[in-house]
Image (cartoon, rainbow, N blue to C red):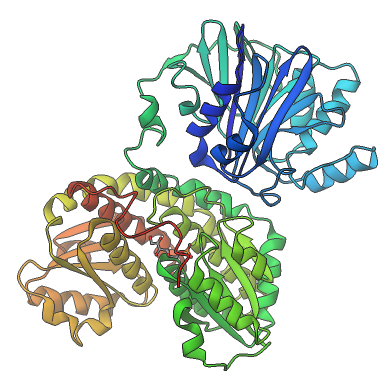
Length: 607
Ligand code: F6R
């Protein structure tokens, strides 16, 4: 996820507007920034790696001439954060500038073709093929708009592209497919951006650009057409009622809620990871004798859930270890035939990094799953899977947890193909099920938001809660309890429901809330036994159940409902969502800021 802004105005300089607009987009990515303007037929550019204010202090982004310009704040996907990989990107002559959000799947092939024709590339990005393709098209006499139409015929993937050229220095051209672009309209100036907050202080009049459309924007006109049909589309602007401040969170009161809602897209984008990336990881895992899953906190819960996926679909039984305790637990008993799957959304958690460094001393192979390109873990690992959640700003992990589970699902399926533990058709069915998760998660969010808010009104002052599950649902219960503790500060414990009667049940008295994670998998009958034990002691039973589970609906005081079509191996992805929402509304009800829990930071970089 990256932030894009473009502006073209009748008079006056645009540089400081571009700078401020990029700051309003910084939540979309913040590892490098760049702006370019045109003045007197000349291109001016300032860009570098680093956060916007760091780059501004170095280069003074406000000091650039010109009343037309484009800018970009980057969340690296192809190529590490660096000066050369920062947008905007240019053609060979330096006269065509492009910013892009998305992924060009076939960029390798296009790049090779362009290089053979003599084009020179400065970056490792997929984006850079676009200005060079525009250059080729414009050499044949096309204007920028037609050239961009031609480019979209060749590129595959998702994109929002904004381009300008010195050959038509009063025009910005843009198009999209799969990534957002919105146009802001004002007397004497027009704007284009990946998100409304960028231009909100200047105008509340917004026009949506839809997939497959192209817009030509000048100071006094916005012309929209379909890519494949040259007929002007008249579209009235929509008045936005948001304030600039609210819109930073795209209208959501908190980043956490926004990020919970972004989970379907985050999964979808992670499912689009290149097959070779997963294949290579699977190759490493399959070639090893012992597999360790290492992580901390929420990532640890993804690992526990992943262990069940492995066991069920590959026949391999990995060991889960908290990274913080790994060296003390394994006590040198490691070899080059072992492998680690290290899971860390930030890629910077010191416990995880230290465990990897320790293991590498014994020649252990390392596969990392992280959300941050270029993070420390990527430099240590033999192979990395980069999840596609985009930047997660809320400190409590939600969408990054979801993409870790998605990546583990993909990895397990690829290892399963090699191990032959399950029949190919069975694995194909699981893969198809994983691909339906984005729509299932969307449904769960919309169905459970109100029940979660209502339950929080009733339970917010509960001094303690138990979260119980069996099998894979222990991971789900653990994550539910952690979310509640960290943002709402209620004491919460997660246990295996089987273990609960060996001690924790002593806590239970009249009205004590016990939350059961209850998919209809092979654990269900035994879980019902545990529910009955808790009921007999007066517990208030809250259960996350499948839609058609009438029996559990009757046994429970409160229920959260998920669709019945979820495969057991992916049940954590579905069943955790109501628990995320419940924690969020508990925190809000108690007046806490769920985005900034006390004592916690987004990545824990101390031992
Ligand atoms: C909980 C949370 C933490 C992290 C843990 C590991 O919401 O965010 O428990 O999961 O600190 O962080 P990463 O995944 O960055 O290694």
